[in-house]
Image (tube, rainbow, N blue to C red):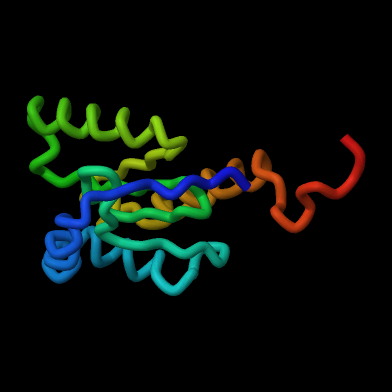
Length: 137
């Protein structure tokens, strides 16, 4: 598989730790569904430093970032900041799924279904590492 290590600013480690200890209700609810490889055996991390940013949830195996946008993300300045951050991270072949805090609290089945759909698409387009190099080209 062509997975790259994404650099991060080590100075963000303590802030990420603090954010994990001060999670929003939406983050706590979604984390209960993602932690412990509950979704198809994939390992998610929360409040993960990547580049100069901290993302809400990250799965390296899936090249997936999940962001929960709360009320503070609704103004134009935050939207532009989020958009720029997303574009920079997408240069590392990362994909974003964004949900609102309200969606997490009121439509969890739809949120989980969207994540499962992404995983199914990802798996269909990604070779199984155990099969790479087998067979003629």
